[in-house]
Length: 462
Image (cartoon, rainbow, N blue to C red; front, side, top):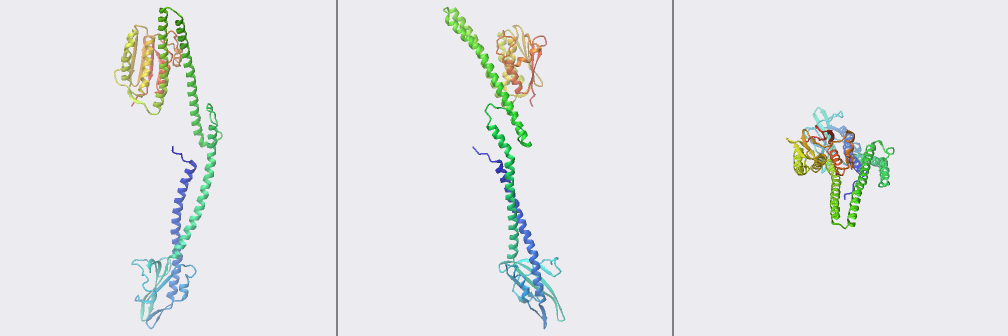
């Protein structure tokens, strides 16, 4: 079985992933910002060196010469880990001094607007190394020479990369410390927030199996109240269910004990007799008692099936059924019983009436209603089984009916208002349970002429 994950660890894991993503994004941003800051700082130094070299460019006898002072290259002595290259071209782009083949500005390189100079900054590759280059133009205006001399100064980018990496590492270090602090804070906060759940779990575990008292609400946060209320509601329903089962078991035991004791006593009395006629009467009486016990046992099983069917309906197991067809099939099945009792059984269901329900339970409902009507209708009477739209079932008989003040009690289990009529007192109780499972309304009314009319109003199906 898969072990469920911890809420605390899941929250910390998700937060850690988010913080890692933020740290990576911040680290990249810090690196590029550091690189931009390094370029700005070192570009200024490059331009200063180029200006110092340009100051040493002079004209002698119609030619240019460059006197490169040491200070022009000494600017990088303490803050650069890379190498410095320079180049001085005359107005005809001939090399006067410096390193050969130092890359020229690419076509279209714009002049910088950050400094008041005819300078252009660009990146290039020189001797297999990445370099940052400044190209500074120096106007030359002499009687025999007029044009632009060019001074290029290049620096390898180790210092710039080192500075950007240092800024990124410092940023990541600070963010990492902040992330660790945030995770620890969240750990303690979540642990503190989960303590009421731990107390709730302990309180539930320490209870006895028969202790179904509501859980207290005073020891949990406001956000946990809906959970505790739901648990209390479930516990209350469970307690009611246990009480109904206990009451049902007690009633069933009482109802079974009496006829079983009577049956046993009758058989013992018959065994003491010596006349065959007495034995026959005893066996006939025992057979009748056995029939009643079998009927009672079947109805007890029907109640159990009602509970299972109700769960199936609650879990979405209802089917789309034609109530008229169910009534027609039930009427044909019970027609021989009605004929044997001298009762006319009629069906009024001309068109399909659709509803959603559990077919076994609905057959049980129809069977109990018709059987109850036949049991209370005298010979020569009528029982009408009627189905009308939108989803109404009626069973009407010519029996003695039920007084208004007793119509609520007939749905109680084992209630029999006429002890002379054979039955267990469970028929209408089963009908009531089936109606509740289908969210149907059941009511008792006087018949059109006499007797009783039972009306069940279902929710019409789609």
